[in-house]
Length: 262
Ligand SMILES: NC(=O)C1=CN([C@@H]2O[C@H](COP(=O)(O)OP(=O)(O)OC[C@H]3O[C@@H](n4cnc5c(N)ncnc54)[C@H](OP(=O)(O)O)[C@@H]3O)[C@@H](O)[C@H]2O)C=CC1
Ligand SMILES: CC(=O)[C@H](N)C(=O)O
Image (cartoon, helix red, strand yellow):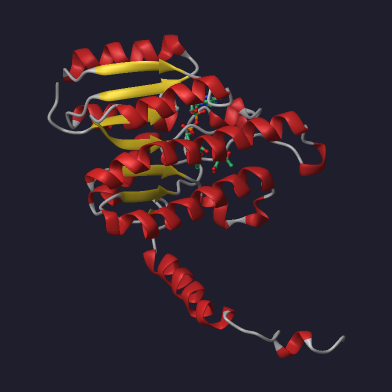
């Protein structure tokens, strides 16, 4: 058993989550890996155990299912070896808002928002009590692009960004590190799962490139890590503009531009 904190990773059966599992295992962390596809989780666990020697537990869970979600929550609450949560599981779907099925939207919200929030909420009391721990939430650059045409998906990722920044503000002073990772298009199955034609997809970042960059941000204890953003001053300017607005919100009267009808 490793002396390092164990890491629970959701959506570890493929793509970004499987790559996080690989990288944390190579750093010597024991893992708890979570997804629906048990065969893929077992194969990943077997490979990483033999290549790295770390201990790996597999939890088969559908995060849209209340009972399965409760199992993962209980593990995070009760297993004090777990010191890092990677909230990575997620999905997107294609199609215009007015044509999307309510059931698909509900599934998207359950995985991309409810599960992320519930798992962070389950682990936080223990992390706060011990004054340590880390939560990595995988968002998306789409959260900054309402013009992208994937409104529901982007809104869930805006939720993840807000949640992460809010938790960093609330839990950071108590010793808990919270990181939002905002990849842009990355070469994983998410695209074909959402119905895209693989041959029509543009060039994308390789998943290892994205996760390795996210780890650099993690090691620097960065609050928001955007691997594809080459000019970091753009993000800094965005945050500065937001902060500049804040003192102006505390008003008892509406702004003069709303005092006239025209
Ligand atoms: N690839 C990209 O371009 C980008 C991805 N992201 C985000 O990265 C994260 C990982 O996606 P990525 O690796 O690309 O995609 P993949 O489709 O490769 O991986 C998604 C993972 O989520 C799991 N998952 C999906 N639905 C459920 C569910 N109901 N219950 C439990 N697990 C579930 C899948 O496992 P299983 O099917 O076995 O349950 C799988 O392990 C997502 O949050 C995504 O939004 C953000 C920006 C860009
Ligand atoms: C739009 C997508 O599905 C993609 N995963 C992304 O977040 O860029």
